[in-house]
Image (cartoon, rainbow, N blue to C red; front, side, top):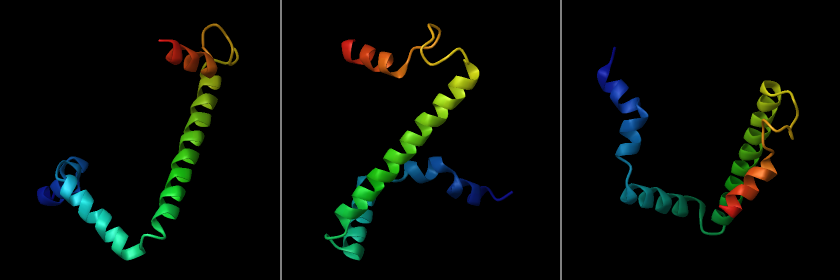
Length: 91
């Protein structure tokens, strides 16, 4: 169709050309636009949003696993989340 448009719209092209100078330029523009007083609030809100998305994704995957393995969350076929976290700390 339009090879140039496809090239510019592909995520590989956009992220392959984004380096440290470009990121610093964007951060400087954000600092100038919003000011230093509002940046901690923005960062806090972004952190809360990411935490909520992670929590929702975990709940969704747990619901899917309950449908796939209906024998229960503590069945021998499926380790519970606490068991997985303990294994990570030990090993």
